[in-house]
Image (cartoon, rainbow, N blue to C red; front, side, top):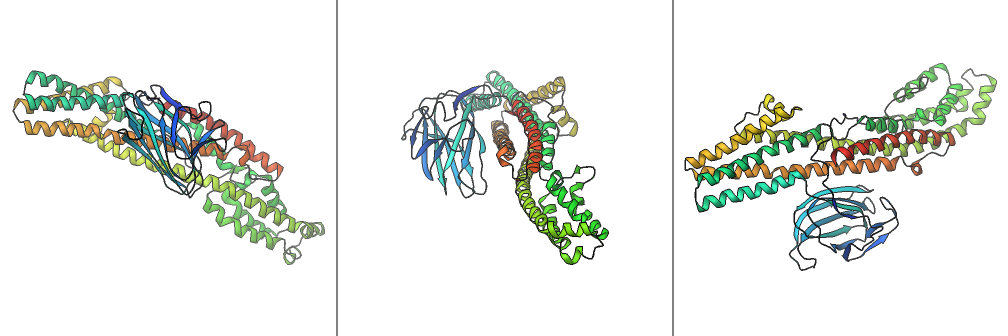
Length: 494
């Protein structure tokens, strides 16, 4: 299992400004929606509570009955029927709630076959007006279920982008009409201020990337989860080892110790991380070793006492069968852990790519404002000292305003338009980083969900009472640590 850093701060821009729409398909049922297609409320497999909305394979449409104001971030949980099921959900808005209205597409949610379980999706609608919401749902090779849909108000970063678009349009309109330097000077100052304000958004997104899926609580939860897939944690396995050593020679015991060494120390009960590769390299050779150890030709010639030979003869088959059962149960547990491992690895790769791209964008942002993208200047943008950040922001804002003003004073409208459009392009590209951040937070929410379900009491794979109790003891700790981690994550990033 991969461990992570510690959350250092609670970024302001990530906190929602409030919920404008919430549909859990329980108390409200379908009263908030009009539907086309075969979508029905169901009490089977809800993500939370008692209800969800199930849509059969095919095409379906949901319309909000009422217009929703100031739509920002949409969060939605979707469950595919099986690993073969894929789905596509298009998000649209319109002033009127009829099928033939002028619906504007704003986002697409897609899931390819290959995974199951509820998956979080977070997309930006970013429409400041009162609009109706529409979801076009296409499911293939099985049904999909929707649950816990909510929409939050537009955040500050989005408001900055909307304002920037108005400023750009105003500058270009004034250029077409006249070249009044005094009127344009105010627009250039506003453009510079908005451009500099995006530095703060970039800084906070980089903070997210440096400490996103974090907290000591997740490290502790992962540690407990790893112990649950280590055979040394269970009495059945320890008894099998003890019984096997009873009927083997010293050289065979040394061989057995070598086989179980990757799992930790049986004496000190220190448990190592178990990978699928470690287990697969152990399981079949161990069963072969076990069968050979309890073979009559082995224990008759191993110099054992009469009582030990009798024990081997009477208990050998049962011990082998117990071992085979236990290892089968453990393998199911290890599969769960391996899937979580892979999921966290994918999230880490996504975060690393996001961080690299955003750092490059930050350097481009500084260069466009005639500021060298040196380590020193990057550090000033990312500084914990607000005064240092404000000083850099003022320099960026002033340079953008001065550069635009110099083109206007020189009568170089061509270069001015190029400069303004390039400025707009750099500002607009922040939308892709917002989408990227939404993707990462969706992945983390899904990861938390699957981790939590993997340690639910009903997931206990063992039949032996002592093994079940050992699994549950670790699971209780994992659930508590995971709860703490998820609460920290939600508070900091959502």
